[in-house]
Length: 358
Image (cartoon, rainbow, N blue to C red):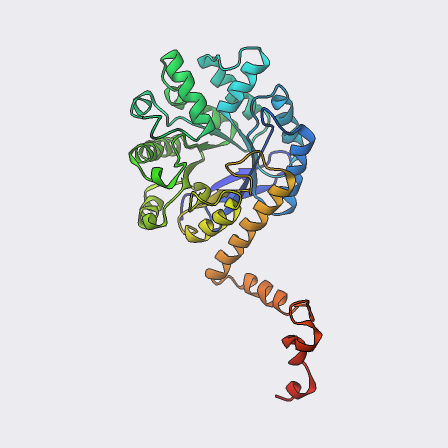
């Protein structure tokens, strides 16, 4: 069990408690540079809410309408919601006609914008430091985090420190004063099994631990995004990690194999069950993972898979209401079906008079 974080939608009053022993689902939606529109993305939020997700993250980037979308989302959803500082640095720069040209002030402006939309949480990426950036061999170990890629390009081009790391104390103060939680995102999460718990990932995790401790000292609620692609042979490392990080741990997936393209929602559901004792929240993975922006039907499939995983986890833990649900569904099986037909249906055959007295 980690230190709990309470996320609150300040408009609806709806709360999500993360770190209480039950895995929470995060649904990422938002405009991409080449697809979707505000109406479509808001429909995805409705689907998520109806299907039981617990929080929504806006991943919009690369469109002038992104700012309008977040303003609409803040008024629209009843779930706790938040956005990413790095994405809105780019979104404001794009709107002002200077895409990928940033100043340190842009990071403050982005953070303040997200906070001012009555957000429940803000995701920042302070872990890609200049020191860590120097150690990356981009040919052998590419960055798969979009925020990480944007930051790396900016830091190398301008020869500057990561503003989110350099000014971490400012962002802690802003979070505390505005009563929003922080998510410390991962810039160097594993994008393949080969990267899982490699030197760069471990160094980032070490810094995340330090940043969590500092947030607690400043009385700021904080969560950490850690896992991506994982190797099940490293399961003992996840147990140790759970003990060392006193904050809710999040996973993008987790993804257990690199070969599940088109079926990664199934892979992630299995991963949720396997690491259920070591994570507190998971982002919904859809069939479009690694392929493109998910459509509404992809969102539905991803949430269904994740909900089945949560149900299985509850059964593993012996939660009675989940047992009752399973028994009720078992008693509602239809018969006959096209597999056996009426003549050979075992459910029909065993409900005859000869069985009633036995």
